[in-house]
Length: 474
Image (cartoon, rainbow, N blue to C red; front, side, top):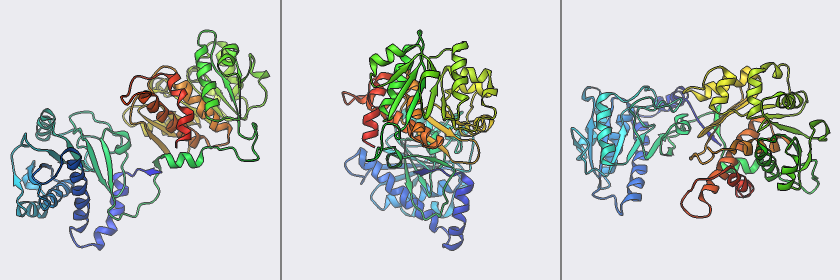
């Protein structure tokens, strides 16, 4: 599991090390790791790093010192190094002296022949877009097509939200120290490498799952399991207008290894024709015993849709509320009043705005937390980085997809079916939503890459077709 730490937590963890180590040792430790990452980046682009040219762009904080020390260490490996110092009056003096002693050159602008640029302008304490002098430097770098390695974060990108509201650095690689920060999941940082500098950090309240975490928690039937103990997922989805939503949602619950899937709705015939293993009926009251309900995809927002939502929420079972059901809930928030069973809301940005009364804004983590507290539910805010928050103080999960192949019609119907299957198997709502988002994003990537090596546009059916293999290959 990956943990993400705010600037204050990092500074608190650095304090005892700074007090116990000789002056400058922690900075050089970080810079040595940065130099190694830059050298590897150079090697990935050229046969040898000897004779290559690295230019560091230096700001006034410790990140500028890190970049100067890293350039100094690279000089010792035969790399030519130059530096653009944006504010000579506030440069890190010891690092600058070491850099010039090593043969590094101070220049007014990044040479167009540079092989790589190190962004050492600002660190995790800064905010706001690039200032005009730095903006001009990096505009020229981008125009020349020179790759950038950012120190801690790309300058101009917010460390907490990952937002970039103005001029900012676009990095091929970001090297950070001690612990990852929220920006490394939420923002555009390129690849991210973490350098261990010896910080003693506690568990964070902002995390993301990795494949090993999902594999360890995914329900696997044991020798004494049967179709009931593996979880029975109930699906209230689809209509005569949108039968595909029912097919996608029930198919996803089947693919996610539910022991049984029961469908109730007007698309029963279409569902069974695609998934003969599904037990289908036209009435929720006649569906039989289930252990979790998924309600909303394609049901419409009329009285029938509202009746389906009321039916599910009146049970004491976990419920996933998606799509049309979210629109109904936005008009009737009282439907969740007093509900104690787990409830998972799965809005995209537009549905979020209907529920909350405003868009999520730049701080999607804070917005998701607030909506979860408002409704007393688990909220999964869809996006390139999906955010999952539960009401109360439990961890917030981030799922950086790394691509946007899941942004296609019907994709959310698949996701809700997977969440429902995990809830029916007994997983806590936050974990179920986070694990489903992980597998869903992976299935979208696999679908886009199949059958050839070059990604191609995918579909919800394509994503559904890769759910089972995404689980099997965790």
